[in-house]
Length: 236
Image (tube, rainbow, N blue to C red; front, side, top):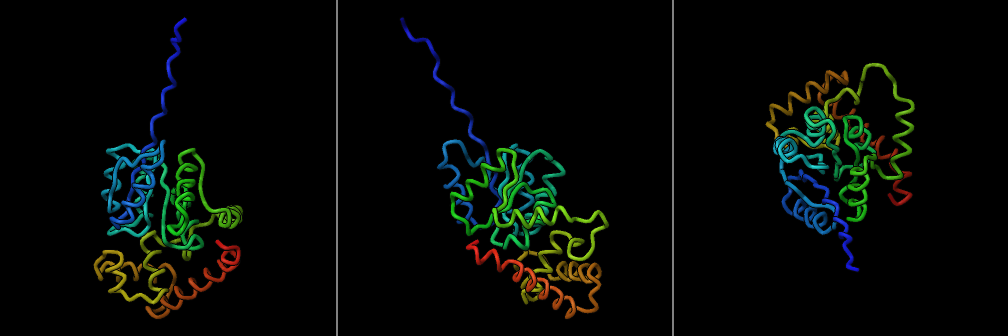
């Protein structure tokens, strides 16, 4: 008797939109993702505005974005996507330390955060975790985030938490000793725009002068480094 059983159909590949302004990094990510049997890159963008347009047009299953992008930041892209495509998950892949950025990323709607220094298999694990509907952060940072969420106040945001995503980036760079001109070049903003951000940050943090603000930012970075020392001791 002839076997009429139909072969099992292959499940469609899950489609990923890459938002990364460095062409070589973007190429490497595309090669890594496209080499997987059930994943594919459906589009690429170099800026947040291009990323949002592509997300709306292409309907990907996941957006993988860097934090530092020309113009609007990756954090702002997360917020824009959340507003226009609320069901579209975003995974942030960044060079910035988790202790400084992971909590903030999740607070604004990202579904995961992973550092660029991680092995490619870890990045793929993060992609699959978010695609499955779960949140991805490293094991080391998960406990810190849960503790923060359990203690989070319902009062109006103040201090660092009151800063917008772009203000937060400017604040961190100022604390690292980066000049206003260098901040403008790094974030692809005009010096006037950086000055405006700095003025808003001073107001929100009640800094009395530019020097006071830089001291506050440097102190905050130092505290973040100290908080991350136990993680580094674990090899994270």
